[in-house]
Length: 339
Image 1 (tube, rainbow, N blue to C red):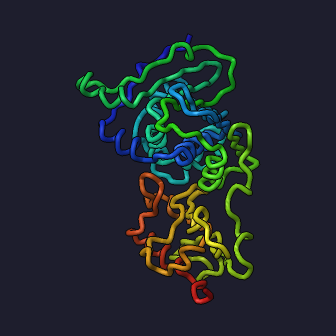
Image 2: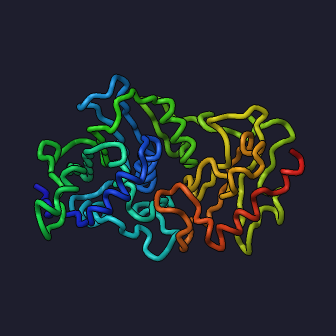
């Protein structure tokens, strides 16, 4: 029998509210954070199961990976702490198992994002033939400081799911008591994940209700009008926006305006930093272009030792020197004269 530690999760109530309930409010970005954790754990695939019927109190969203998981002690030391710097002082730190995956997570806040879409979360870590399942409940966490003054929050150990097991190593997250009543569209979730995570592919398979995410689930340059798309290398200075800072990707125009595909998606380390971006330009700037402009820009330097990405991972820190260099170097760029 594996001895369980005394699981504790110290936090301030406002932390859970601002970094959980208000971090995201829709499924695709929440699931993206959990899928990113699986990628960091070097899982070869992630299986996502979404309810397809009407949402009831018993409905669950399940995310299961097959990465290197955690022992009970590692869950306490590495998973439960909020705001733990996952990379130390080196932004290029790789996974601890095989050293093949550059860690995409940074602040250890992804798990809190689940509370933006669900009240309760079961986290089961399976490693070396032993499973430990912890239940985190937002309502309990919020009331804990009043009910237990001066004591850190203690998640519930789900005894029925804790103990020896023959299941494969990995992590399973179950989200329940969902904050919605409408049916979930697997197609929209699939497209949302494809849009946010570029590392999904042959070496990292993501299945939604059994269907794998394919390259065609996101917009491609070939869909732009002929002659109205440009590689990042065609930008001034061959895509170099500042000394030693180079972008890659493409920008183009669609012949028909789209409400779904518009704006430029900005990535760092193959993970979305800002979607549907117009590089912080005012909404009145080049209105025609805003209706047709699309693209995909990779600026890996945003994810370096200096933190240039907003906490919710939905915006570049445009006020920074590097943010301004990115804006001036890419947008509006050389293509507006052709419009």
